[in-house]
Amino acid sequence: MSVVDVVNIAGDVVSQTELNNSIFNVPVKKSVLHQVVVAQLAGKRAGSASVKRRSDVKGSRHKLYRQKGTGRARKGDIKSPILRGGGVVFGPDPRDFSKKILKKVRKLALKMALTSKLQDQQLVVVDKIDLEESKTKVFAGIVKGLNAEKALIITGGKNERLELSSRNLPGVKILQTQGMNVYDILKYPKLVLVEQAIEGIEGRLG
Image 1 (cartoon, rainbow, N blue to C red):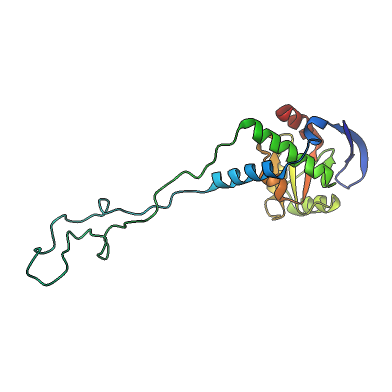
Image 2 (cartoon, one colour; image 1 turned 90 degrees about the horizontal axis):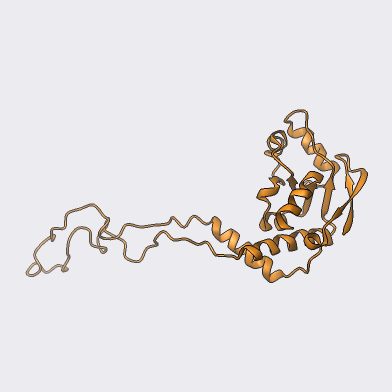
């Protein structure tokens, strides 16, 4: 078990807690993290780019003029790709960019991401973050006290006041344990865990 300090919202140490070595102390492999991050970003791509083919364009299928005798090109109907407003020949079609990643690989990558934050001393455990009202100014003071102006904060459950207070702070993101993912953990310089969330993380990855 790894023992880390637990701080309050002012940044003062109030206690200590143990972190499971099977989750927060595993060998970190950049290749696994890269594979999962690439798959996660690929899954966000819309893949909805599309064009109208010759058969999709609205218009008559009647030949514009006779084949021979006019001295002009041998055109077909008005939907021909060589005409303005006609169909597109080699344009994109809707496609699925998602990549399949094994469940155990995704779980392993999460453990590696958490381990990397602990090893880099960028993991902060806070006892609780309770706000009496949704105020961005109050929350900004809290993250400044935690030295976490650019951080991912993982909560044990839904905290509406916390989520509303953080919306206007571009460097901070709030996620519940269920929404924790490799990309966001690695993206933000610091990871802040509300102490209650540790149990949920161990339940999810244990």
